[in-house]
Length: 390
Image (cartoon, rainbow, N blue to C red; front, top):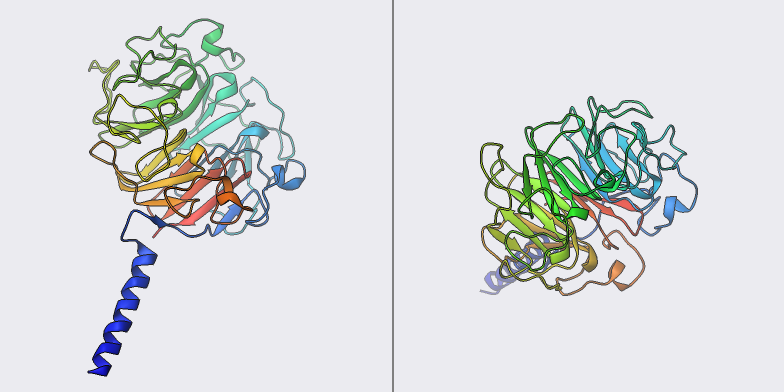
């Protein structure tokens, strides 16, 4: 009898340990990152690693992406995108290629086919590279993906040529113009752009220079760009991120502290301009926009990415955390399953109110998930963190 009780107790302790590791409640955290780029260790967060710009330093990175082979980081304040030709295996590993600069030690801004100004997002599909060149109010496309420094873009969206950079082409909004675009996503046939300054998302069929969008989300037409007068299922305020699956797309509606889910993909033959979202994350309904710090609320979210329909990551910037949903929700106000960067869902202090470590975040703005590995652009800490998924 005593042996039976002891075995039962050991079994209970084992199950409790497993539950803590793999999660049985919403209050689950993933412990620490297992690799850092931009810094020598998890305890230092100096701009450009406390030195000058180099192949292994970062300054305010806002986006990180992997196409399965290469890793890309939008190194925003250094006015460049860094490319690692294979997945990094050590802390502060040097990048192999730089886009936007002639070499790894330069960081000046510019408005040409081979320069960038405050790039905020990067996306690649294995053959093409897309960069949201926010400061130049454009999206640059590289086909093929650069394999050497100082490459020229092959196409530009949002401007009529590669040497123009004015907001809305120094005029008013149109189907061809952009104002402070913050994110770009390509699903193989449609190009989605978070046109933050115009409070809208544009969708394109063409990847050619001077292309014209065929659909606009967040506005009822292509010539309106101001802030919405109300919060609704068809309005956006400073959208900062966009992501699409095979049959739905999501928009990070930063100004309304929410993520909108649309259960369709716009096409040029369907009228989806000004369409309503189907569901919302971060709010209980499609007419609310307050911020919060819980498993079901957000504060200034800036980016979203998922592994297909699974492992949805949200960069909840002002809460200094990343939320993880096992699947893309199909109802309003769903709770996240895990949190990165905080000890619990009701915590929000930068670096957990203490010194930076491998399990803390400060102003994260970019996320990536492939189902087994998570990357985070930990912007204020001037680093990118890799977390192994469970």
